[in-house]
Image (cartoon, rainbow, N blue to C red; front, top):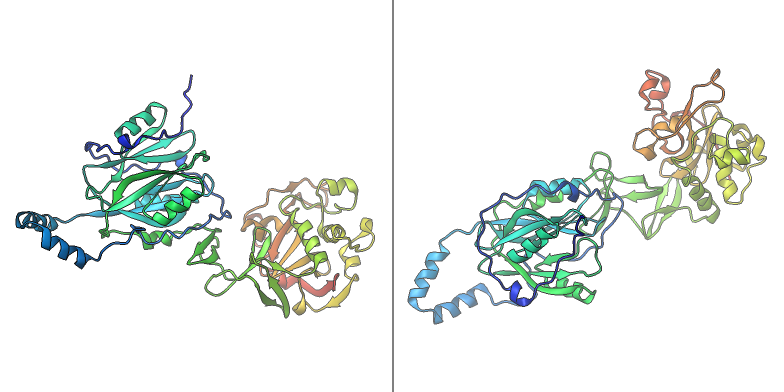
Amino acid sequence: MKKKILGVVFFSTVILSQHVAAQDDIPTPVVSDEARVSASSEVQSSSIDFGTPNDSSAPSASKNELQEQNDATEPSSQKSQRILRATVQVTTQAMYRLYNPNSGEHFYTVNAEETKNLILAGWYYEGVGWFAPEKTSTPVYRLYNPNAGDHHFTTLLAEKDMLTKVGWRYEGIGWYSDDAKTVKLFRAYNPNAQAGSHNYTTNGSEQALLIKAGWRDEGVAWFGSNIEPQDNQDAQLAQTYRPNTWYTVEGQKKHTDENKNWQTGFQWISGQIYYFDSSGNMQANKTVTDRGNIYQLKADGTLTSGNTTIEKAIAAGMTKVGKSPYVLGGGRTPASIAANQFDCSSFTYWMYQQAGVSLGEQTVTTTWTQQRIGSAVSFASMKRGDIFMMSNIGHVGLYLGGGYFIHSSPNAKFSTVYGGQAQPNVTLNPYPAYYDNYYGGVGVSRLTDILSKDPTDGNHPVTRTTWEQIQDNVVRRIVK
């Protein structure tokens, strides 16, 4: 029968004070496949100020003061030995710290390439945790729990052996503890966590904060050095970003595009429109202007018209993005609506219907009937909530602001909402003699997007024409 893997057992202070004999050096292993947990691109972790690497909460005397005290009390024979030892060069390595927002695990490694791979897999990079000597008599063992998917680190040989017996995988020596015991690494345990139950830090304030929050203080795990390594790739790793992902850099929220560049201007992200300045910093709690119209950016950075009816209609439409196939003539009967089948005009009708606004008779609604509803405004002054016509009154969409609009169209197969990738909607055309099968459906596009990125369209004009180029200068304001 397969053993159930247990959590880490706490050791008494007697065991924790053991000095472990040196082991043969095992190369730093590549992280286990199971540890490469893909993290959500939109999840944000709470940030803690970890201070500088090897920070200590206790005050210390200056280097000159300590030297004067030692010179005054130290015998000459010991002083000569100390001077001899000081000439021996100590090589250290940067210890990189990462966080998995899915499992809650903090992970530590000396391997910069492993760090980069985890960042690209969705882990948050939290910088250098401390400096570790390259080789001492006290190794820090690295173990992996294949059931929980997290790692544990210890200098205790007995603890390592106990964990391997209950199913943990020994992954070798991760790094070494400083035998000079220069910088303390505090260890804390979270009894409520299923994974990532241990945290290691040089920061006394962080340790105290965790203890106050219910973590158990397990004392000093090992020691780091105060000598900075020559090969510290912290700056390079801090620039390792995933595409289409939120980040917080120096207190500013930013978002990358598909090329890992910081986005600027108006951007549609996960059903909302945000605005980023020229440095890529998300703006919040201020106003922004689009086509002469002033919008409010809320505390979370999302753009709003400030009108409850318009926002309710848009929110309803967003629930259909990627879930509603385009069907010509669909969306005009209860059965068709229940099947999420819409064409362009039935979809704009349905959105406003959910907000309590009628655009006429639903069973006969078309772009031609909707072009006369509401009041006329110019395309240049179009604002959030307005509907506008395209392709000789053959298509209609609802403007979201910032150059984006929501619509139901077979050409939305490759809409902005899918980052240029095909939507999962394919509908068999009930009239095959007249039309091909329908692709796409409800999606969000930019006015500057070309109508189709479908390779099967070949050299058709839709592959080199933007939505803005086919707009008809017919805009109707439904809600003033």
